Image (cartoon, rainbow, N blue to C red; front, top):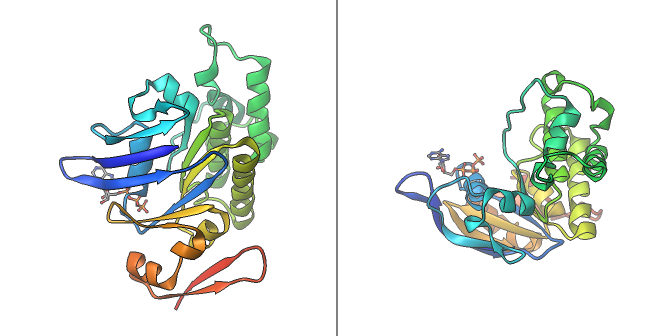
Length: 254
Ligand SMILES: Nc1ncnc2c1ncn2[C@@H]1O[C@H](COP(=O)(O)OP(=O)(O)OP(=O)(O)O)[C@@H](O)[C@H]1O
């Protein structure tokens, strides 16, 4: 995935300026930064929901910003920050909606579509309530259903905006471990906006820190998540420890 967004925003004044990054298949990019720095806007710009984006974003030879909806939906799945799920659908029906871009012209589901959707439900641990109405789920369960739908879309690129915000600690770690495994085993390119710097450090192959709509720092967690950068980006003094376990970096406000 090769992205160069020169300008993007909502009105005449752009929010994003000069965001450039390359992300090879199999890698997970954690995008961090304070409230309002532009993380969601970046995801929206790449996913084609903002008008007048100046730039390009190439995936497998297609410029997403100029692709039609179906081509885009076969290349990119997005988990937005908050998603409305129509309450009159079951969990299984919602996850199967992820297969829509792959259906034949008759719009019928094949055995393979069902198999992929069930695998996505298994990975996100929602198979147990496949037949329940979405209106009867907790916020965290709903979030896992939306994640399952995105996984069922089976795209080479997956972008997620704070996908763990409603998940308890176990599901946060499990979900990010699954995501990381998908990246490495299925060569998916994954971009995740995260507020939790410890999760960003643990799971991001690359960490990109944004500030005021621009890239403030980009590189490995050790390069980006330094007390100096964090003070500059968040205006908050922190201490950064290296844990002897596999968690790696631990960041604590001073
Ligand atoms: N629909 C909109 N119309 C106009 N301005 C918007 C709109 N959505 C967001 N903005 C502005 O764009 C800027 C970037 O917002 P964005 O939602 O991308 O930030 P963010 O980094 O995702 O923040 P957060 O961490 O709070 O989710 C902010 O100044 C915000 O006020």
